[in-house]
Length: 124
Image: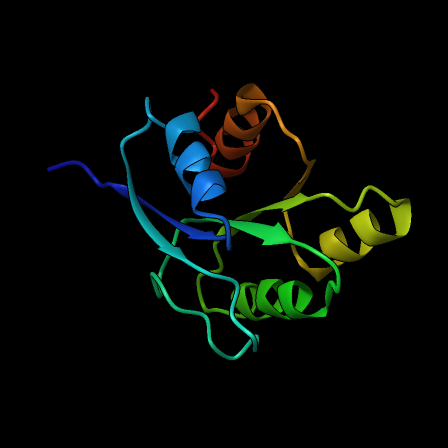
């Protein structure tokens, strides 16, 4: 049996969670979803996710804390952050916390797929 990549989607919007899953419909991924927790200490879902897609909104502190905690894991996942905050300072803070890709919303499905391919090494 082939290995199935595990994707944790941390996003409050059910519609956006479904859209993210739809963007990856051609990928053989296993999904776990959760809402953005009130504390970075409460990361649910896969303990050993390969990819995390997280919605990052104002205030940034909770999402930045979650990204930092995910990057502290023994085998940290690749992280794609989706954000409506397009200020350079905010994008830099999200990247500095450990996101491998920051995609501004609204996003195109091909942007999300390309970021996942790049981060997971699936594009070549």
